[in-house]
Image (cartoon, rainbow, N blue to C red; front, top):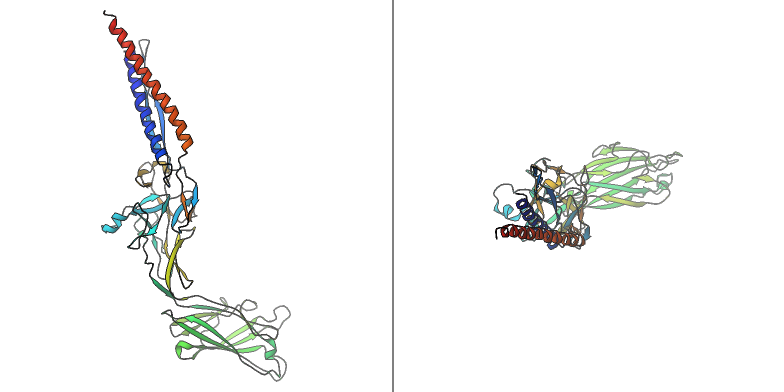
Length: 433
């Protein structure tokens, strides 16, 4: 009966608008929830058709979609491990409960932002119980990336703020000018001495003693020096001795012409360095490239150690961590040293809106989203990791309130249809009287 179909259409309209109001209510209640993605309600008509010249109302149906691809604005914070993503991609996280249970690898979930802080066990977690996941770094600070299509290589980010760390010195660079007048006939032949501090394998301070002895000729200029290197950790023993000569041409005057080993490792012209062996192992000493002014030079009458560079650091206590735009988690020490301890990839799927939504603004891959891939931050389709920032809710309260007014009017109109049908059925019943 046509009038009955109108009643059913009105009931369907009430149900559809009630569903819409539920989504609007969710959006408004989460307008201050960091990283929240709004839900959109779409209406679809149901067409039954006409029979015997009579039209039959079909009504309306609804479908709800969480718009995960819509991003909120990024706001700055004062916590270095508040993280967000500037663009496409999500942070991999896991449940702290699963991590602490130790029953195999925890399930990887995804989120677009999080306020992470270390808990009592050193895990980088949110107050809602999410642990950040990443690839752990090797002892030398390099990262061996895991497989890109599975979370098997990811581990919970965990560190100890009371951790001590020291890095041995393995390379030293010498930027020293030697006086050209010291290699001229009649010069005094005075040694030029230099001390360079370095750190051994246990983080203790040691020194390299480097002396430059000029070769004084009977006539003219020799442009030649003997460089002697001693090691305090080896009881002052000589670990390298080299004959160093310099150019005196108009185009390359003062640059290195040759470096010849007397003792110690040979000079490598490709790298501009020699390798000597201190008490703790080999150490590379960069003296400069041939015909290049970057390194040892011989100019004027001044001895000038202009630039001494080295790697390594003394023992220091961790004072904090930071995450750079490429997702590297770096530990900072009070000695001034930094060290990479984890690398955070960004997760991406072909259809973000097809992800399965969970509590706490987290998501799981589904058949609708497609398979995920772990990208290096800033590469491929993904954006960069932003520290000291969080993503705001994607909800626009003004738009939601406007939609609420429309939904309320539509609901009232459908209720009026039901009331009208009821009155018409009552009139039909009164025909019998």
